[in-house]
Length: 333
Ligand SMILES: C[S@@+](CC[C@H](N)C(=O)[O-])C[C@H]1O[C@@H](n2cnc3c(N)ncnc32)[C@H](O)[C@@H]1O
Image (cartoon, rainbow, N blue to C red):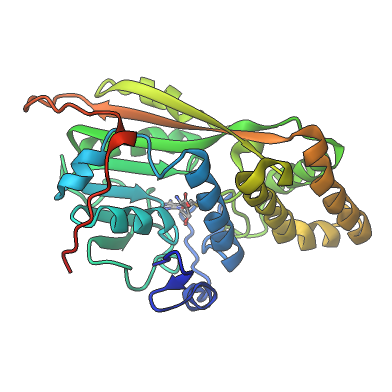
């Protein structure tokens, strides 16, 4: 869908975003803290965060699945794939494995996948069981999803994901830790405003989203706690990365500064209308925040938790250090 020349299915990225944006989807079953569909702002912000995390984690994944995906025929599921940034990057890198991206919002899913090894499907995680056979997937990826469902629902969804994983398959969940670290006063003012927005009762079932608000201001039970409770999963490993927010932090810091600015810009109208802050004061706070993050060395922390489904009894697969692998260039189309 998106390639390095910023072309999307033959058009520009901006055109892609315009094309993707259609009318409102109203689903009364949704948790009231979620706004669906994703707006163009939400999608652009996902792209910024995707780019930052790719740099921060030095790649798209931490699970030891590189060789499996290179060998081909593996089935991968991206839960809550949004516009498919991760799915399409992975599918072009591993052209002979198969990638399924699922999301509740059919309007955010690409109309036509960027390659023939991608399949997008509209699925609401609230509607269990999921429409996949037992033991289907070799690898399941979930990123920035923890706050898209009520806390208690995730345990049921996770059990369901374990059911559709093959024995020996991996699951990987990537999320931000709960705090923005070393934030200064202006950043604190902004995060408090965001917090206030999230605490308000929504105007309608689809009015608010927590989909794109960083976990730094929300408190769901983190993935490792949930994974540790699933007896069918084993070998849990957690990888951490700290990401600067601000120009002081190079490419990652610049992207994450943009990410926070975009969050503020998406909510500022609401804050001003509700007189939570005056427009000129908000402008000053936002400008001050951009300098302040450099002075305070503000940062976020992220984790990727990987676990494997028990029960694989085939030949032992030796995984070398994944960094040593060459990418296999295979063209099948
Ligand atoms: C923050 S975005 C994450 C997108 C992508 N995983 C990424 O890392 O860029 C959350 C996504 O979850 C989707 N979502 C929210 N509730 C959902 C549900 N009940 N079932 C499936 N997808 C859902 C949203 O439509 C949105 O695309």
